[in-house]
Image 1: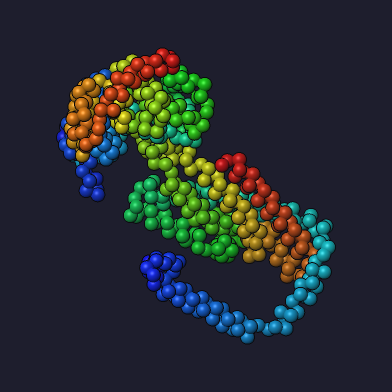
Image 2: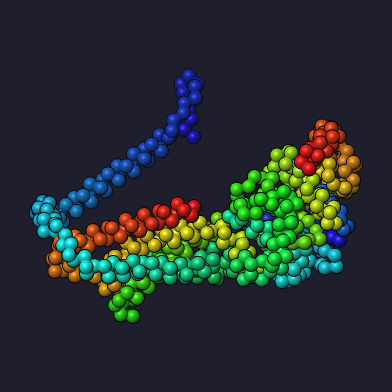
Length: 272
Length: 269
């Protein structure tokens, strides 16, 4: 490779050959050129007046939004409770569906690699690829607005995520432990319960609280499209330009998310 | 007790791990299976309880032929074959007791096992076995808290609680220190004698094998190269099994070790 011989016969080593170095320089040059070109395009289509004005507007909104309208909190208890419930029930529902899907998708537990595994993978990919807001819009059209639509949107969106992480955990288990349980004459289900499940329990617990944590954040915006929870209040306040209410809602959401992160961190460190 | 007839295993890669092995192990006999890595020792053992499916040939356990059994019948026969593994293969996140009781899975229904409600007689037997191997106080520990020697003792309990007629033992001492290795080998052989169990023990350590077993089988390239008493393992025989090497040290070690081993035995007892 980049070892060559110098004039007096000594061996010279360099990290890259001259050709490789040239290719890298050209790649960097092309990258910079594309960046500059994009910068110009964006700059040409930007109304710079609004951008220069942005700090003043932002300051203006901040002025109007402070102090938050603390008394409004009375109307937020129920929506934030709904939001937490949407996230929690949605996560539980998702896990119930994700576990079988994960076992069908994992190479070492699937009954058929040719038919069932691709089907399970399709479920995983398709539920993962659509954002929960879009699921919520679809479900509201089907079952009407409300908390149920929110729960289902969160649940469906989470199946793929949970099942993917879980089936990867299943594929990484120690096969010898499974072999040992099989050798005792245990049935297929017993092998699963004694050989596989104990090995994936930490992963399962970690995935559950991780997804629950994500779902709390996702469920706060579901109300924007009418799927229940605190997002409904948020969109209402935004539309009526009630900035002190908006700031209070944002504070409440922040508090809920911090709380959920704290709980999931506690749970994870307790299990692993 | 155990009879292998023309047992052949060819892996999908084309490797012929076993070439027509014939073997007869009478009741109560402990056999050591030696041979270089890749000679097919593990495959042989796993073909008996069909963790690896043999390509052709027959395996007779008592009056039952195992290679043609369906899933349910195979599980019933597996209960009669206890297996002990190289790296213990305990379920790490279960307790010692759960690991031992998992040896009874073939006898207990799914929901009872799932709820960990094993029959009292099984629990009694588990405590008896743990006491026998000196781990009575460990029943509630998680398997991954134990040392190597302790784990292998749990593995032995799990195999014995099956109440097997045959023990299949795959490199029981490969990951243990020399002293623990001997203790484990001695324990296995004692338990086999107590219960009249036949056993096939895969083992790398020729000297250790000579110390404890009545019969040694040498496997080379998937065929039986030697079958006889441990005393008959001369340098010539070892060269035939393993290839050219100076074997004097390996064999001489046994005589010297004998005295020390019995001293250790007394210390342990």
